Length: 197
Length: 85
View: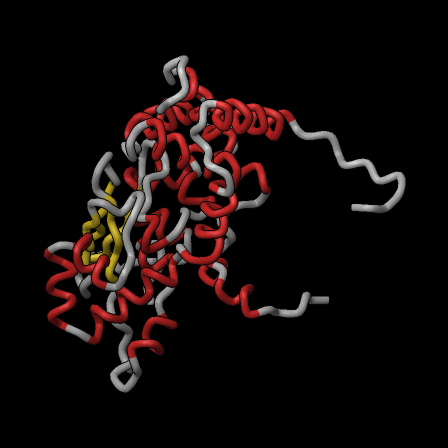
């Protein structure tokens, strides 16, 4: 800002702490020039649920790909060019008419970054982390995803190694759609298991 | 009044939800953790993850990125005194 008399707001305590961390870690030689900008750019524009939608759409149109995806998620996802931190051990779980899968990290915020990006706020909040295990049907209904009683709910808690991705069911009436059109139908929440398509 | 859409807006992950970060300090502390994991721990995410679990357990209601900051502060304490080669 070049406006005369402009004074930026004083940094909040947490901003000061982060600035101190940045100074300390940079001094240790752990933060190369441009690293923060590059990581931020990547997670704000390249890595996100749009990657996962491509994986799901491919699985819907290519039965052999789907077979590979369910057998070795990491390798099949890498075929589409996605991988990296938090995606070393990907397991894809398939929804069927009788089974609904949903993912959580009960201890912190583990999440399949390469295909979904960083998790939404609610995924990291205590109510979701605690209640999904205790009362999944009730919580999912409250989140706008009511499930019939005869649908089995499988809750997958991300461990140190494994990251899960839900393969939603292909919606009826989409037979004539192209792979790109199908990808547009897929939502982030459906790949977490917090929504159905 | 809505802001004009640019092509880059359309590419952002917010199409399926919110943006990854609400404030610059959040993306900074996220990237700092990535830097430490990559350059001090050879890509092993587990030491940071354990600190994050502990930070969240210590204050479950604390805003997420503040727990992340606390976790990184704790991890930084465990680094050796000398700079990494």
